[in-house]
Image (cartoon, rainbow, N blue to C red):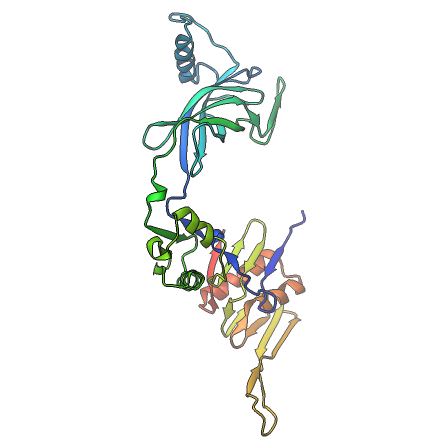
Length: 364
């Protein structure tokens, strides 16, 4: 069995922060969707529906539906195999208007084997307040397939769930006076004081006056009155295309199942020694001081110099890391030596446990 080991390194020389639009960094106050859910019935299945003994609620909803259509089925015994009870979920996007179309997801809740080829019967979709905001109906596109014989069954994907593109029609709008807002709050998706401060600065610079104020690491308030904009829509349309350079925390993310390691350019490692198998690793920092020419206006600068060496040896090896070394150099050296994924992850865990890894360490 061949394992794929992927290491993504964002080196300082390559990881130059690029300006990002504010619309990709924040959520605007009031501009949000609303979750919808409904309970319905799928018909037209090819013998893959619910078993009425194991899903009596399917028979109940089918009886109620037929009675609403004028068909009297009281006292009748019927157990069809071509119907299934389902939950229908969707999200009402911001500023959705009556008559608009939205996508829906259909999921079986009984013992149906597949929803492939089924048709969802008219299903009201309710919001958190219990009101109906949309009605769904249409042919289901299932994401899998199932086949079975007398003694075996094969399933690929998830045939008991599917989607209906544009399968629901909006019947009621969410009541929200967006045009009446006097203050617009920008909520950062990843709260950070530095990023919030930069957003505040670029907005004030663009408008030529102090119209934005950072409230905390995750919120920037925009004063619509001080901005002299005609409406919140015009203000957001101007703000969302401004660009800033977001600041990110030093972070190392490890996925043990796939052997993937992702780290940022700001990850640093202090002096530490690690014993791992027959490996000797040494990383040393030897900065060089460069002096300007005599009688010149130049400045004395320190040029970083790093000496890294990895030597396989017999017996137990000792890895020594000296100074504020970039962790990407350590991982790059281990990867070039062919260290196994689980060994690489174990080394990173040991360095983090020793307190020498100066970054947020996340393991999935």
